[in-house]
Length: 121
Image (cartoon, rainbow, N blue to C red; front, side, top):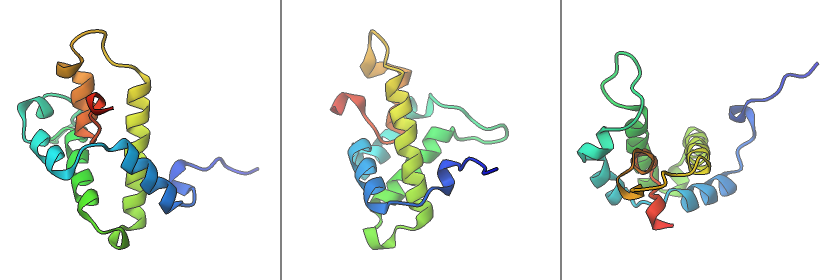
């Protein structure tokens, strides 16, 4: 009996992952860094017990680091992380945003912590 594979076990298609990441993460490193410095950015997200920083906020800092790397310097771990970011953003976008005040919504703020500003689409 074969065991189902987790997404982490799938072979990495670097070109496809890079394309999906580039089209999903629509904030530049500078935009994302400015955003991460705001109170609004720090106001959303889930914090692991004992941690000070929300998961999404930490993800944003890692996304900045990945976006600043040269393609040749990206590791398999970076590509797995890029795939994780794309998956999170797509799931969050599929939930749909609020009916009102999208610019100031926790939904948008959370997505922006992961490098995607839904108002840029």
